[in-house]
Amino acid sequence: MLLVVATAHAQKYEGLAATPQMGWNSWNKFACEISEQLIRDTADAMVKNGMRDAGYTYLNIDDCWHGQRDADGNIQADPVRFPSGIKALADYVHARGLKLGLYSDAGARTCGGRPGSRGHEYQDARTYAAWGVDYLKYDWCETAGLKSEGAYTTMRDALRAAGRPILFSICEWGDTKPWDWAKEVGHSWRTTGDITACWDCELSHGSWSSFGVLKIMDKTAALRKYAGPGHWNDMDMLEVGNGLTPDEERAHFSIWAMMASPLISGNDLRSMTPATLKILTNRDVIGINQDRLGVQALRRMAQGDLEMWIKPLAGGDWGVLFLNRGERTVDYHHDWQKYPLADDLSKHEADLKKTTLRWTDLWQGRGGDTSKPLDVKLAPHSAMMLRLKAP
Ligand code: GLA
View 1 (spheres, rainbow, N blue to C red):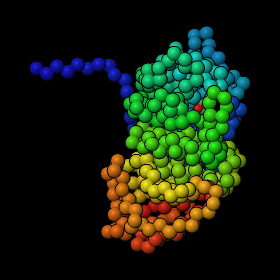
View 2: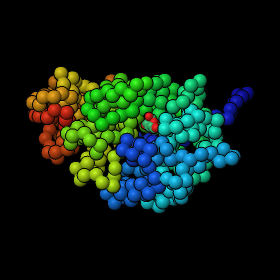
View 3: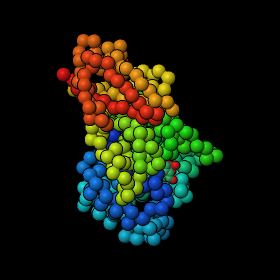
View 4: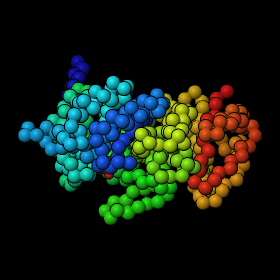
């Protein structure tokens, strides 16, 4: 006789991040200067400017929405900044076809000093579910004595028990190698410390640093084998619209797309320039990010400041990115036949000596095919992104 022992085993909600999650988050631009009016206005902007329809579904309130816990320990919203409460805000956001995200922390206090969830995990998860929350970013400040895997698993189980599908976004900055343990715990995990709007800088804040676009790219490159549908390497919220040059913004967005990172905009959506909106809503670039194979890009070639990245896509297509990291213009001829498109990890391959693929430049709109060398002219800090079509 076969005896099957079933143990009560909570799981994360499957199917919530089959492709990398997309949305907006308040932190990069507003930090603690948030309010329910800002969230409502941002929801309206996302509908009006086409971002919702381009795939940006989640509207995420980061740190500092919290008030105090009530006498029974229930977390409440800040009564001054969110007088109508989170439930009303969730209703407002849902009525516009969007989903609402909240932020908490595994420790006793959040990074911004608000009440964390430590010791209140099940209670908070029930509160979020009752409010209609769809997404939880869970941070790692004030966690002395806690083990990350256990702390995040506790919150995963609490969300499961609360009964509402809530996407679980792990944010412990890559400190305890979440890629080794979080695949069954969350839907994404941050790979680095916080982003800052610069190309390749590292800014020290004493006990922690924030990082520019290339620093995060380089750190995340080594982690590609851990990413896939339902469990993504999160390179942090976007800084498009927050002070990079137009070339840098296009490159930053292209890189995040190629790396299958969540695409969470982090700028002021009420007042951005048409140029910024155009970048954020480039559907071809978004399509590379949202491809259902869910393979993170691979650095295929590096020659000084010039790099070529490739990303296998469903149906035999490829995303290809040429990147100029440096301060001088690059003028280069790419011989497709010299660089077969090959990814040992996902076992995808296209030998361009034998097959010719047509390409489209996803920022410039021009096209061609791989039978002729490609002219790659790149200004400093810029990128060219192509989609190669299977015949
Ligand atoms: C940490 C996170 C950021 C942001 C802040 C809020 O630094 O990494 O993304 O959530 O906390 O205080």
